[in-house]
Image: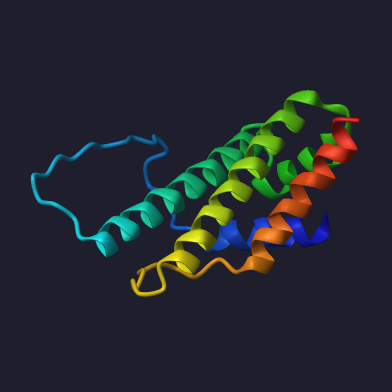
Amino acid sequence: MKKFLIFLLLFTACSVSLTDESLESTTTTSTEILTPCEQIEKEYIDLSNELFNTSFELNKYIDDLSPKSVDDDRVSFFEDLEKNWNYQGVYKNYLEVRFEVYKSINNLYINNSDCLIDGDQEISSEQVDEAKKDLDEFKEKYES
């Protein structure tokens, strides 16, 4: 659990700072047909955005717990996780999305090695395994 807290803190610290807290989706239409590699890159971007939005929602939920700092709220959130079903639901959703996105990004890299995907980083099989382990441990602990 400590490893995950460290990961969450690092992920939050390394995330892009948003000036507007509203999450708006925009739809653009184009008649231009994407190449297979461009389609793969679009899938990667969509998956990355899904993970970013889910992480942002989790951090906003935690930050909105009290007027205290987000760090204090994060400590309180994880200390109270065992006895608060709402917290468990929010955190489980984050873990599920994280696992599915990691798995999907990893598969994009594995199955499309001929395409250069621009992005922050490749998601390794070890990271997918770690995300699965975190989700399984959470389910074992809180759904039994």
